[in-house]
Image (tube, rainbow, N blue to C red; front, side, top):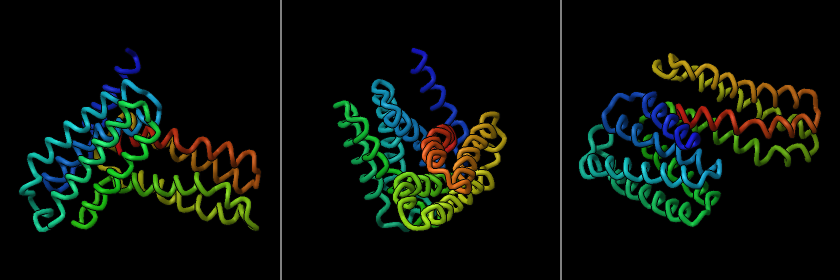
Length: 236
């Protein structure tokens, strides 16, 4: 029960501190994004019951959003001919992930759900809308690149220099997480400590790369995802 209470509490916090945009459609999309973040976190944590619960809530919220705005969205989405198609594509991703979760395939469901994040980001991007989630997504993409390719880079001649370039990009994007935080997010009690954890994980990796210590680098790489996941769950 303690784990379930934590999931519900985190979901409430995520919605409460959702970044406010300049138009009601983006605000509503951001509100529907809260339980999506939670199910991403839960599938990544291999929490079966919580994944089922948060997936059900994500589908419910997204359906409500689609019912309200799908046929006739307001500006700036009113000129986007693919708006309703994108909403349907996200719903299809949710349905597939829900099936995978109920089958106990949480890793596969997590990967499936990543598709929805990109669909929503593309929807905002082609309509000229930027939210805090976009900065979180940019950091996430670079973090995944560092995690997936870090070992390969180290195996190349001058590998630590190549990796340092990627860590520099990650450090820059971590700065965006601080500088672009909406006022209500920056003012929250939980945000500063979570952000410091993300910044600290990048700094730890940076120091390890500068020391050219392979063991320290591998250890630091393993400590990147945890702090980001917590920040994403609550504020992404």
